[in-house]
Image 1 (cartoon, rainbow, N blue to C red):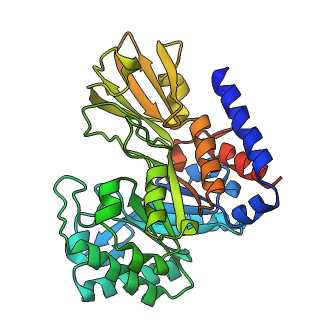
Image 2: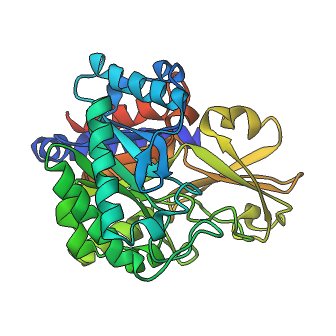
Image 3: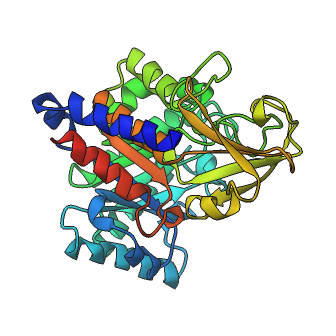
Length: 368
């Protein structure tokens, strides 16, 4: 009942705060889904409520963007065909992902390789009739996936890559990139002044802020920082705003999955306690796997605007976005004049009355 009351309060605030001023903010509000499913599964979701689907992932083959196999080709073709249902929908190809960009640092160090890559992006976009490229290099200039090379020179090389892509793609195709939502990335990976005039969007991964390598529990996708929570979506936005990055190109991220830790001490309901990362759980499975009937108790951090759960008997802790936090993130994006909200990923949503439907309701309430 407490969650329902909070969610109703969010809806009331949204409807009261957005009149004519709100309409200008949401005219071009993006709702962006990353998608790694197959060609048939996507039909199960309300794609009419999306503005973008980013196919995840393509990879480098030599210096070129490569669609890995025939199944991936079928999926991309299916996504493009969805424009018959949603004429405004844009489909982007994405490079990389966590563990998917091992050769990015050495390849993008070369001007000739960058040009070859940009040419391949243009060719694939024209072949599939897709609408642009999303770069998910995790991460330029700082440590990312274990064993992946990185160098300080990645930062200017990323800028050169964006410039080469824009020269090749012109203004017809979109360029976006997935950005780490944590301070080290924001400060060290990107030359924001040089890059931002050339890109359409930055998709801030304001999730996994407490990741699978952490031995202490916390909120992996909080909206706000607090004395106990360093990284958050709001902190990323505030930092980028402070260095004059246009907020109307920034997109915050929601997580359609929970992260679970085991062997977590029964103190502070498991929050900020030592533990061992166990696994991730899809949003569509949360009601079953993290149910109150199975022993979980649910909690809400009002400072971080983050929900979590703890199993006192089994010493299991879970951190996640839920309907309340996603509604608050959507409202935050609208209130702050951001470009929109994105999420990882569509296949993790419920097929009926899921997070996409919730985001759509909040945006539509803002139009009233």
